[in-house]
Length: 252
Length: 225
Image (tube, rainbow over all chains, first blue to last red; front, side):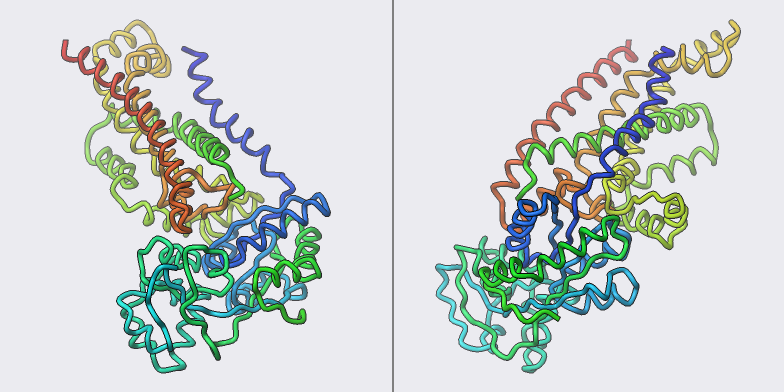
């Protein structure tokens, strides 16, 4: 019985010690916008093959990832689908402003299931749909861009009641794939990775879309974080993003 | 996805096991004290300890987030000690431990209450101190209820979602447990991959509930006799 009791008392301690062992793994943790999933995963593998540095990712809505970094999440690099989230973090001193790079752009498209006969000839046609999947326009970049675009056309008030807000742009894509909504607004690069949707409309003259990447100030591995940002903005990164359909600009 | 079903399963089992082990001594202690006290204080403590059962898990998560964020009361202390909790595996432990705690305490308390007080008095009259009475009489008699509570707490820890996603996020390979992975895979339209994980959880849940059922049933029969 005494043995059992001491076991019960020592177990939590042992468990904590056991857990502490994996806290010093040298992996680089990158928080990336959902729309970058495939390109960053491929670039992570290429980077590991090239340098031996392992890179792991957490993908999600840039707004959600930024919020997690603000709360102290142990990310090394943040790649946002807009500049606003990065500005917020920069103002709070949470990312390294000097190493911030902005070279990636994208376009908004309306996707429908491949077999759908829905025709969208203009932005006005969106208001006629029963439902539209959209990354949460209150905070997620893809939704914010869409809202800005429709507000500029004076159509947001008509479209808003039809909007089904989603966690991120990939959830909006998946909703069309599964037929949960008849159409969603996503990035052109998202539409490109799906076989079960087709682009029904491409947004022209939408708001400028600009991604932003920077090392996180609190990173315990600052050199590696800076090097990886450099790799993403360098020739290898540009080639991959171009291949995936992103618009690559001169690095700032 | 880079993370395999197996690595998600191991991560989940590991954090659930650690969380259960962490709350075990505190839970048993709380159950023992509550079983032997009466009055308004006991009711108050009981109520507070049971809140995670009744509150929405996201509400518990937000309270934990406020407490643990860098500017929060606990967060400042941890920051000074150089301990990172939020959005690491430790946050998963914190969330699941808090959510599972009442599930351990309740059956354990009932088990302690069922221990015949005359036996405890007898042990005391034979010269046993309070620690010895607890260890050599109460604990051996109540172990079945404690074990049932432990299994319940463990199963809750395996499936916790709401509080976990609030304070640990959904980081593959680090904080992504089965429940979170099922959610994430469904979100991105990988329903088949999500269903595979659901299959695994069904098997685990079945085993746990079956075991708990066997344990509690035998205990009831004994008290009825």
